[in-house]
Length: 266
Ligand SMILES: C[S@@+](CC[C@H](N)C(=O)[O-])C[C@H]1O[C@@H](n2cnc3c(N)ncnc32)[C@H](O)[C@@H]1O
Image (tube, rainbow, N blue to C red; front, side):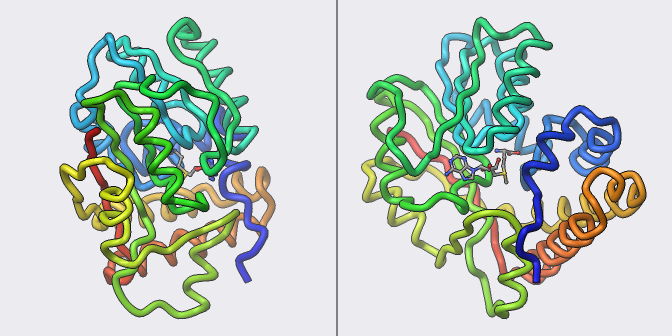
């Protein structure tokens, strides 16, 4: 039913349209080009969890349209490499880095997190990945690679928005998976894989409430701009994304689907 709904391409290729920017501001408060369940409070806390300084070298796994990485580099002065599987995301991100005049410290590349990555061992002080892990096959390998890329004492922060919390029907699962690959996690698996990768888990924080709140706001902000969005995305896509957002809200507010934020160190 919800197959072939385009969530990421339409968000990244329409990034600079005022309608999409208004929707992000109404959903999150601050616009970093998000397509995730990262609240603005969490966005503000991530640099602290990662212990970033202006000397840090940082990797963003699944950077989307790059707004958050560019913001970090501008605020903190750290160097950031972001990568994404989605070509529109990388293109938008590099254009944003140029516009914001931070290409000396920020760059974006197209890679698949489940494949071998072209970065040296022990090359990053901090790595983060917001709401990406649920899309990536071979999580055990992704976590081992992250461990390999981090310097000793470095921090890794990631979220998983698809931790199973209760009974979910086939139809609900299908509606929750509009675009690409999705992996649902049994509770405890991320903790186990983190430990097996050689990373140390410092905190696993339940942030399900943020997903419940943001999915409702995102849905309602889009609904208000229905005509403009249908003109951009087409009616079928508009309705599919709305069903997806309503589904996320239902599953997370009933805590049948949970989101966790993990902070790890090497
Ligand atoms: C929920 S969005 C989050 C984007 C961004 N991190 C944010 O917080 O707004 C998930 C992102 O993961 C990317 N992604 C999916 N599979 C990936 C993979 N195998 N390697 C790299 N990125 C991937 C998608 O293209 C999408 O941009």
